[in-house]
Structures are given as structure tokens and as C-alpha cells.
Image (cartoon, rainbow, N blue to C red; front, side, top):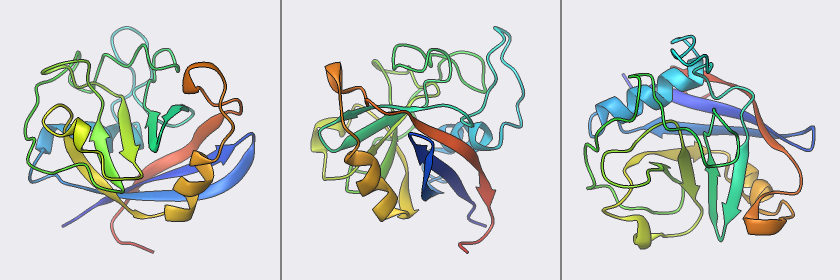
Length: 174
């Protein structure tokens, strides 16, 4: 049975809506489970004291038409090198391509998947074979477009906070 993960998102304290993701758990079971568990927060706290959850974290960077998030350790894209499995975990499958709406694990090289992810708004073949696509956005296109219009400062960091205020799992699309 397919489960869907969701994020409730605010920009500068204003609710902009819900993003819903379908995960490719048959193609990338470890990565999909890592993302799902970070959405529920069910794994509690990492041995280093970091809460293993996306709730309260930021979408920390917007580069072109790619939205980056999931750095639950530093919040700025230089952390997130842990997972529900402890440290980083291995790549599983590079077959799915980066299309509009693709949800992908961000990694710094082979077998360095952690908590960071990104969402593509346009076809992004430059990521194919380097970052695993783990799912796709199935609801919330207008939310993505609103987030992408957030004013940016130095190094493509948003000038306004973009926060995942709530997240979890749904059995059905509602």
C-alpha cells in the first residue's frame, strides 16, 4: 500500500500550504524509509542529540528551480550528514530521472545520503546518476511555485524563513 508523506509549509510565518510526496519505496527502500521516518519523527533522537525529524526545519536554499531542505543539524546546508540508520547510507538506485516535481536525496558524493533532500521544479538531468530520486510531488504545485518566488540573499539563501511546520504520513490522498 502506497503511503504519502506531507509537509505543511510557512514562509515568513504565513502558511503557504501543503506538499504531498509519493515515495518510490520499491526502488529505493532505505532512502524512502529514511525520508518517511524523518517526516513522522518516530525515531526520536540521534546519538548526537539531534531530533530525527523534518518538523521545524527549513527549506534552506533555492538554486535556479531547485529547492533544498532537510539539514536538520545546522539548518543551512552544511549539515545533515546523519540518518535514521546512524550516519550516511549507501546509494540504492539511479534509474528514476530528475523531472519536474522529483524528490531527491542530496548527497556530497557516492554513498553519502543523509537527511538533506531537494525538489526539482524543472527537468534537471545534471543530477541524474549523482543523486537518487526517491519520490515525487503529487500535490502542492502552487506551494512549490510560491516557495520558489521567495526573495533570495547571498548564495541563494532565502531572505525569509521557509519552515516545515508540520509533517507526517497519509495513507490516502485527501
